Image (cartoon, rainbow, N blue to C red; front, side, top):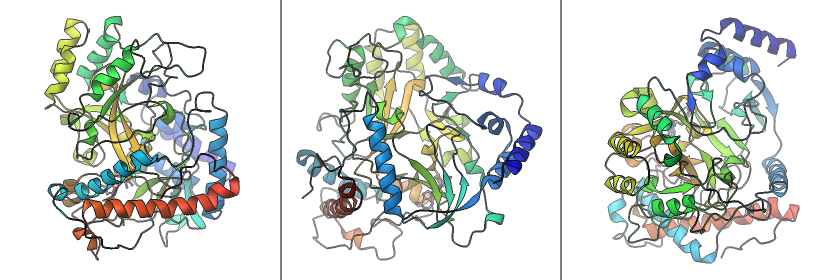
Length: 517
Ligand SMILES: C[S@@+](CC[C@H](N)C(=O)[O-])C[C@H]1O[C@@H](n2cnc3c(N)ncnc32)[C@H](O)[C@@H]1O
């Protein structure tokens, strides 16, 4: 796009802006957390203040044809960039490595859980313990999306934030630049943190105000001269103590050890039940003495925005999806699902496809936990009242890349709940954790649930995965969870070999790699 036409668009956007000055709009929303240490730049305020039609015009005018490098070249460059980012980061350097994370002890458990999760995605939860292994050999299907060499780049950066660049591509066959379709779902307002409208979500706004009182805020005073403060396993750290307490609430934690939430250790799920979304932990935050730069902050890596993400579209029915050009090791907090915090009755039909439930009104354990907290009485009473309502994150109008994650019958991400600073519904983060090593170019996916797939997608899932219920040759319907686990093990090994040979070896960055099998 020429600079002349760019400035024309900007001018148009300014003229057509129908939603009042930007400052007014921002003032009407509340952010509970400090935005990560960067902010949107460039044309963001102008874009934000414009209506959907002007935003659509803006994107149409920014769209251009681009020629891309071969995948291996692109992924190698990304890998080097991320390695350098890690090396130059005082908190990550020496504490976290960009390597497939499987130590032999946890590998078996991970694969079993993945196998069980595949059964759950298929609505075969009840068969997990009864279906015997068939030992059948199912051909491996690579989940990686091969990038076309010619693409339409809709925009270089949907976030308008130079420290978190997310380009958008459209790779639909036969699509022309001149007639490119920009759906409303791409025109949302980008936000890195959850927001709430104090007028429509009065109760949560009230909880937020009450939570700011000293006795209602959970923070630590831990400090150290090292860049990373050892809050995790420090019995004197109130945030760590609460982290342990919340871990104890995980469903089935009596029969399985709870899933742990620490900053640098991979989050390894310890059970496969379909209530993973209730998996909870508590993290230190910027309000603490450690500023969240500690071993008790499972959002630390996530806030570094390490993984270069791309929004892309290759199938008209599925729409836009998300992928990374760099390996995402198993058990990593990849990104947060952000949006507006709303009550159930504020969700309209369209939002239901995108919104994610934040709290659960049937959780009596949660109310018992609130009883044990040393909050002021009025705050405790109010939190208990709120616990009988259900809140959602609605990313339809305001959100981040999390809303682009598509459904798969063999997903590679799981969503978990992590609290920071307090225990109101506004203090929850919905965090996507990688269930396995996600190799570069693989679509990032989650399981929307068997019922969603049957009812909302009319059984016409187009995830294309080996376990897709919509697959014509449905040999997987006879597979047991052991068969699925064996499949995942083989697939990971194949992908690891290719990643190691093509990306890692040529860059000589193979120290400490755990060799699989
Ligand atoms: C949360 S959105 C995902 C982002 C969406 N693709 C977009 O372009 O905005 C969910 C919608 O994406 C589409 N979708 C996601 N996964 C799909 C799948 N496996 N098969 C078919 N459609 C899918 C459906 O239209 C669904 O209602």
